[in-house]
Image (cartoon, rainbow, N blue to C red; front, side, top):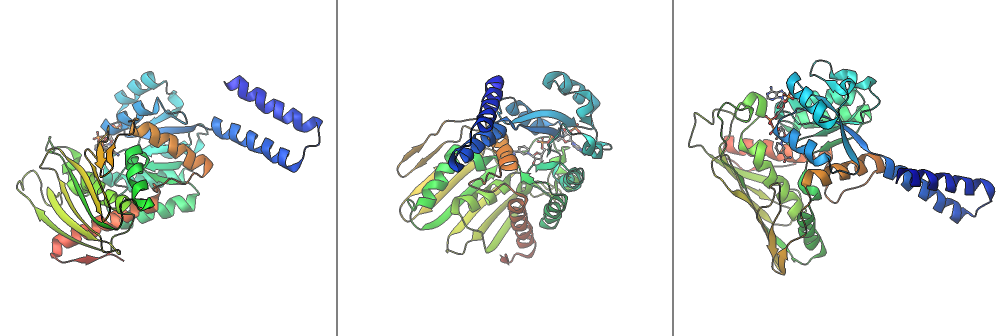
Length: 372
Ligand code: NDP
């Protein structure tokens, strides 16, 4: 395939050299050369944080056409050895949390995917940006909107892209639901329901340590209902109200929310009613109701297959591993300037963080919080 591309490229160049082509022919040839180059451009990624989700992303990237795992940043030398052997990662592309700024001198890495505990994302992402590499950062992008905005600003100043790991933004059934909403098939939108939750295990894990997580279920899983409400309704909320319940204050200490019910109001008059919890299993459901139709998805944000039905019938577009599609699409965003149907940039991440900030404020004050 590669030699055929080189042949085509050479053939098109020699054709240019031996004739005087029209402008149309020239531009067709240029387009051909450009598409050949684009097709060849693979995003060379280093994963930071070789934990559970980092492993899932690494496995999924094996099937990506335009993204390749070429490096690691880890605090655990034994994992680095395993990953080197498993994924064929060269020693010179392996870093730890102390020395990864040196990545700036490594021309064989294009982007770093930050997959560490939430509270570390800001500092690590800013260091990656300063090293001149594109940043892909997991959700939640930070632990509040101010930190998220600092990340956006740092990436802008460094001239690198900042993308957030919103894998659902590339999922086929989700995109079909969005298409139905956009086309008007659902009529005037009135109501969204988002349920996001699971029973969290090991009480010693970082997700239950506020210094590393920045919050409990809301940061981890509630964010899916927030983000989902926004992409399913296609609007930004103007107010939130929220109520917290805590049945186990030992496991869910101060700063770690166990269950929060929250509501969001949108400019059109649509409302969202959502639940975020670490205390109930099997909550992964979206429901969108309009004056002419409806969409129900369950599961709605798990690793898939995503299943759903609408007033017109089932939503059953084929499942492709979310992270495989995400990484291919992110390569296209970074290299080709592709604009995705639903944004995955840093600004999109900040929008969710502003809503989380407002939800925490609403819980604390018991009052409706307006979003500017
Ligand atoms: P894990 O605990 O499984 O892995 C986190 C990794 O981060 C660790 O294995 C470790 O890797 C590294 N790390 C660095 N510093 C610390 C520290 N102080 N404490 C613990 N780990 C540290 O977490 P997950 O992989 O489940 O989650 C990581 C991020 O990914 C989170 O932000 C989470 O919200 C997000 N996530 C996103 C999902 C999605 O679907 N988009 C799904 C699951 C998680 P090492 O030993 O290599 O240094």
